[in-house]
Length: 340
Ligand code: BTN
Image (tube, rainbow, N blue to C red; front, side, top):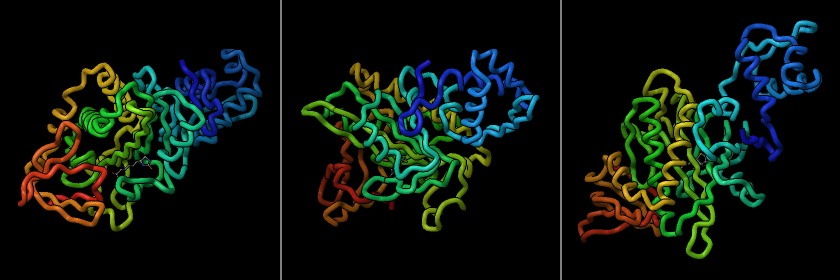
């Protein structure tokens, strides 16, 4: 099992910690003596105590009774690798994780980590962002500890020309993961908003860096509204967003959803690298039920264009039918897009 990196890049999770947690979990509610744990794991009792403190700091509820041992009473709902790892079926994606309770933005942290050097497939997770970034210069708000806030760092073997397809691939994989895990059938709005009943359920922010004709690195930022309620969002957003909890009336496992999404992404990027992903846009169209509908687009130069969304072109541009003919629109020129 590969080591998992924690905050500040220090080794946070070792096999030893995972083993300790598994022991406590398998006997949840029962006291397990420090001596027994120490012997089983070949550790000193002070090291066991130190590991217990690590879990307590993450809000695991562990009762320590002198001369008796430790008892696990409660497991927090956190997106820590300890909790999504059991569901993870990937070779690299999500195997190295920087977990934060609070951070400015996971995409910003991903940029900083790339400077320091991290492996392909590293993820940054946060329970809350103080400066979450959305596309087109907007903010991304997500209440503490209820949703998925993720940045995936990739160093793919792809040509720069494929970069425009990565947001579509991400949208498709996220929609598929949502559908598979919850039965909810989302729709895509160009280029990669994930909606349900015309309300936003997830957003994707892809940042790419190039070296000559190749992709140097990619940061795929994903925010999914999972277990929050509408009242957790500020007033202005409540009419525009939705969450899985609102749709289903019950909580969804963030840990499982994350793991399934990472697995689909890993397979999807590998297929792209092997030149076997010519159907990405076709798959995206399956979810893009706004095609054929009237839309209004605000461009960076303050121009507004109205027309009918006809299709997405092979390079990812939206083909808009306007009164004066067909107009291909590049996502980088757009400030906002709304359905009429
Ligand atoms: C959008 O729809 O405007 C894109 C929203 C992307 C939000 C995610 S949350 C994780 C990652 N970190 C950020 O600061 N933004 C992205």
